[in-house]
Amino acid sequence: MASSSHDGDGVAAVESDTAALGREQLRQRIVEAAAGLLAHEGRDAVTTRAVAVAAGVQPPAIYRLFGDKDGLLDAVAEHGFARFLETKHVDPGPRHPVEDLRAGWDLAVEFGLANPALYTLMYSEPAKETSAAFKAGMEILMGRIRRLAVGGWLRVDEELAVTLIHATARGAVLTWLTLPEERRDPALLTTLRESMIAAVTSQEPAVRDSGPAGAARALRAALPEQTVLSGAEQRLLTEWLDRLAAGD
Image 1 (cartoon, rainbow, N blue to C red):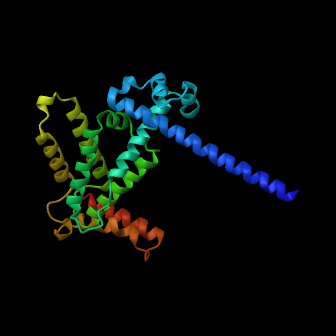
Image 2 (cartoon, rainbow, N blue to C red):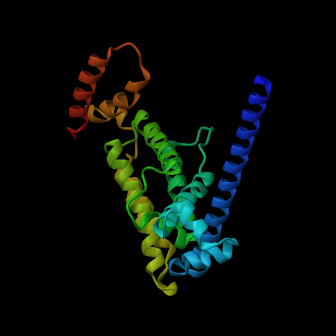
Image 3 (cartoon, helix red, strand yellow):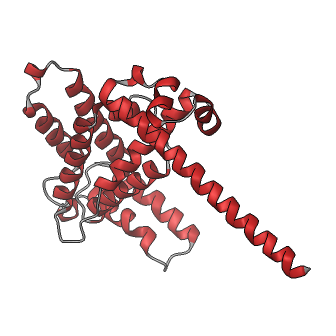
């Protein structure tokens, strides 16, 4: 009897896993159908009825899986962040950290220009910071910024660097998309990128300078890697380094 009970539990578990897999596949099919409509016909075309037809499902399925149209659009934006993440990579080679930043910015802009409707959905509204793919992409960007800081190349605070990089990339894409074809000059993108590079990085590593600010930024960036200091000592040293870094 015990064996039959265990067998029944196993069958129920398999059926539950199969149902979950089927639900996820259905969800993905609907998201891809919505993303296709968005790409080819624009945001206004992404209606519940149109998505249902494109996905080959009944409209109630969309409400069960996403709640409403806004929930579906959130899922499409998450799909966009996941696609963008797939284009990113961390170069294991000895690429110069400033060139690595430049290449990452170019990659973000190229993705936006290649996927205008999706990019606009992703970034014309407040960033969906709960998105796992968005967070993973931010970790890659923070890694780039941390390498700049450790090398003494970072001119500004790390958080400000993130804001500047995002602002210039989003601004470049969204401005480009609003321009008539005849006014889309590639020099706009290059100028915005180089303005960002000049604002965020130094032409030479700041740790070679006589002033303490660059060295303080470099040491502060490397501080989490060490284990010699206690937590209280780290907090005190971080406070001192913050004050020194803000002094230039």
